[in-house]
Amino acid sequence: MTVDVDAIAANLAAVQRRIERAAERAGRDPSTVTLIGVSKTMPPERVRAAYDAGLRHFGENRVQEGEAKIDAVRLPDATWHLIGHLQTNKAKPAARCFQVIHSIDSERVADALSRVGQDVKVLLEVNYAGEESKFGVSPEDAPALAAHVRNLPHLRLVGLMTVAPFVEEAEQVRPVFRGMRELGERLRGDGEWHLSMGMTNDFEVAVEEGATFVRIGRAIFGERL
Ligand SMILES: *Cc1c(COP(=O)(O)O)cnc(C)c1O
Image 1: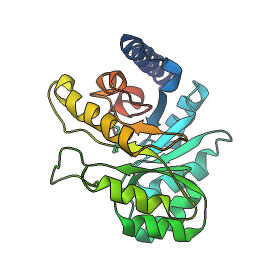
Image 2: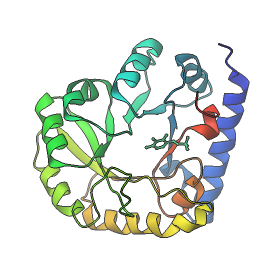
Image 3: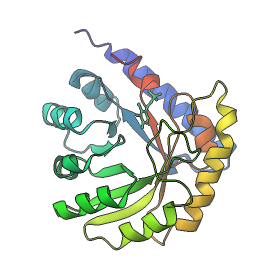
């Protein structure tokens, strides 16, 4: 496997620059946006290349794949985010491997994660547009789920996550990101609070609308393997 380290470093710099510009357009401080490099399907060598180029946050969408990769690369000061659907039977390895879990979408999965007994930050995944094909709690049910999670030991609710509908023009999903921000304003408490939104196709619009975590795969690592 040949790994084009230089391409990853250049991609990363370009994405960071685009995030900065988008933040500035919206009058936001760019340092309030954290870039999560989504390394799903990518081998450990590419994760290492991105790390060497300065990336410190990584996202995986499957518990087992993430677990194996985290063990293989052993990055001392990286933060690992679980961004894909979590099944209750994977709660234990998920809580042990990932510091932030973006995909809480039911009381059942929140309860299972809490029972592991490991402190973990969590976000609620919101299916904002009500798409059949997507996981996530509806915006209407999000307040009750937030209240439930806040009552559980070991889980710290730190924000909301969404995967916007796939569209031709990123501009078309601006209302989704804006709606997420408004929902977040209603649900947030006093502490740390994030909006995890924006992917390769739409991250600039997401940053303009208030994203604090952007989850970017292809623009950094290239097309998935
Ligand atoms: C794959 C994935 C991403 C990254 O997608 P890209 O289009 O490669 O940037 C972000 N979020 C989630 C939940 C994903 O599954």
